Image 1 (cartoon, rainbow, N blue to C red):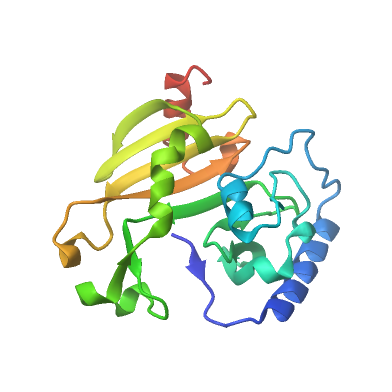
Image 2 (spheres, rainbow, N blue to C red):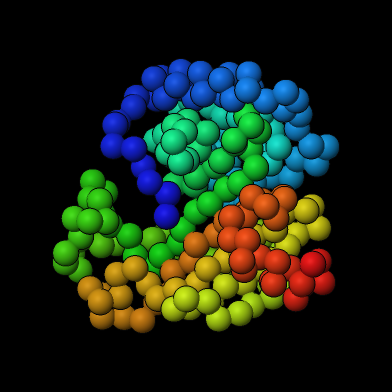
Length: 215
């Protein structure tokens, strides 16, 4: 799971730090060129509709185009701070060479009420239903149809692919707060990328790709 640095940044300072991180990364990379294909990052059209601005982020697009107002937190990637960020919509995007290569988000049926962190939740009254959980029913449309599935850890792992080249690894587990709500729910972690190497789980992804006929 991604670790969020404990410092809290304002939108302006986050944008400045992000710009410096991108500049430093570009300086260390001989040729940081975006690929020809730049499909839209999953769920971006949904969030754009909510904001009403129609603006979406794309894979292989320059990370400097991410609006500062959308940056919620800087995330740590190994020893590097600033090549992974958490957007206001709680989607993390990763751009090790200055270009967006991965997105990751989570869906649980219940989430902490405003102002509460997950670690502070100790009672059913601390929770509310997650309005974005309805997107789970739209995975086929947003992420593509499931083409491979296997048991994994204490749940299941599946792979979904879209014609535009985006593939998504979906990890399905028991709900995060099932014990508190006395209900059996499902939680989903979605990691998406255009290149399999950026999905992250290299022990699992090749097997699923082979099932999908792409291995």
